[in-house]
Structure formats: C-alpha cells, structure tokens
Image (cartoon, rainbow, N blue to C red; front, side, top):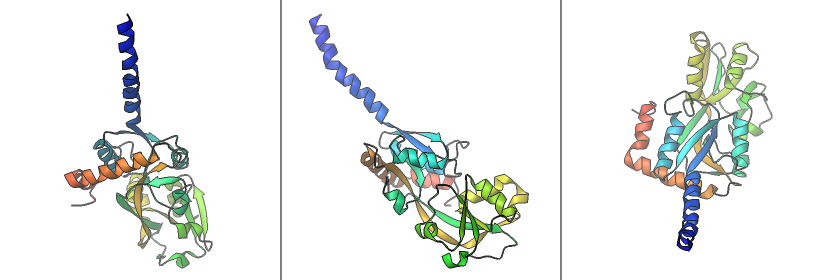
Length: 249
C-alpha cells in the first residue's frame, strides 16, 4: 500500500504538469470579423488565422478563434483575458499595453467615396472640413487620429459607414482596401457601382500579432509566433497561404 501511495505521489506532479502544459498550448485569439483576414465563415477562418495557426503549429501551439466586437477584443487582450490579437495595427497608444510580433502582412488603408465625388487624398490637409466615418476602436494612423481639421464620426461597423457615404451623410470613410472590396462586393452590384477608392493611401499599416503586457506569458507567446513565422516562410507554407488568397501569383 505504501508503495502504491509513493508511486501516486511521484506521478501526481507529472500529471498536473502535463494537464497544465496542454492547456497553455492552446491560445485564444480574440477578433472581430475582418474578411479576408479574419472570416469565421471561411474554411480556414481567414488569411490572418491561417498564417497565425500555421506559425504557431510549428511551435506546438493550437489557436482557437473567438469572435467579438473589436473594442472588446482589444481590451480583453490588453488585460490578459485573451491570449492574442491576430490582425492588429501598431499605434503609440497600443504599444503601451501590447507586445507586438514581427509584422507578417501589410494593410493598405484607403479612403472610400462616392464615384461622383472628385476628392483625392494628397495628405491630411486635403481632409480639411470633411466628414469621415471611422470604426470605434480602430487605430488607423497616429497622425490621422490626432488631426483636428476634419470631423471623425464613429460607428460600430464598416457597413454603417458605407451606407452613410451613399446617403451623402459622410464625405468619406476609410478601410483596408482588400477588406473593403470584399465587403462592398457582398453588399451587391448596386452598392459597388456607386463607390470608388482614392488612388493614394492614408497609410500602409503592417499587420501584427500582439499579446497584452499584463499576460504572464506575453513574451513567450509573441516569441513563439516570430519563430513560427520564420519557419513557415522557410518551408513554403506562408507563400502557399498567400497564393490561396490571391495576394501573389
């Protein structure tokens, strides 16, 4: 009996470690729907999710996606309640709360307007007096966020902004060009034929994975992604994902 108890005592820490290790190897990614980067309706749940999962898989992690409004996702990761954001732009304000990975893609932010609007973006001065629809909680660009010569109207979604542009209640809105084209196409040909993009972009924002500085394992989580990203670029997995989404030929 004593022998059995001794074996059980020795095995218990190993069992506990194994269970804890398995739990820690599953990361919870918080995100809002942002096709094609995060798309819960797509087989791979989007470009960003496929890249992030592939990178983390090389390091022995699995990634589970939880969909929620962006403001809640960013707050939850900043507070350490979720593990990672998978498609975040870097701003000075966010850098105070998040640790960012190596960038894995670039998001070109362009203005969206009615086709009968001759506006072209040539710098922040060209936005003077404009009514511009923005999404609550989005980072865009530090200079854009701080500018005071135009009006920013916050709404919860890009659909709201597009409809307000169509109704001339906004002069412009802005979004990642690829994401906006996917959404506008889904809204139908009558919407698509009325809208256009500026030729010039506000910014080309790198996309990052990020973990909250309050998360006890934030450094390990981000470093694991960085190692995994190098691995999938080396073995061709990264390029294969880009080709699948039509980003490269």
